[in-house]
Length: 167
Image (cartoon, rainbow, N blue to C red; front, side, top):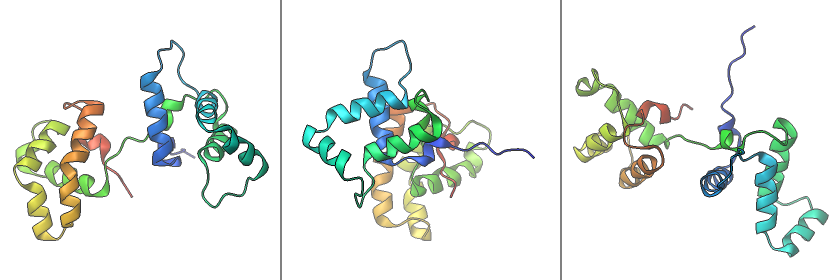
């Protein structure tokens, strides 16, 4: 039996993903950041009253970041590389745009980069998709900001198809 790889970045909340990414970018260390490092740092960032309450009451309605980290440490181990858990995918709306642009003849011969998707957005592909009912107007308004965020993080020449969300 062939095992399918699991994208472990989809197993954590977006909030924890952002924290891990920021910590990874901010720390100047030769050693990779581990899940136990992230848990220690997050615990230190919380007020001591929260930590005392957390130790006594483990029944929060919303799972806390510490609970989430504890579950990840239990499943993957203390020394698992935290960066492996960072999510890097586009929203459903941006994924639809990327798939649409990838299917266009203009981009058939070249690798589809984030810069090319941005160019397509600026040329009106989102408006066209909104007119066709494939996107909502409120989704269209946030696409450029989301795409620019991906470009800032991964560069304009990153392959856009690597960010498509499959649901």
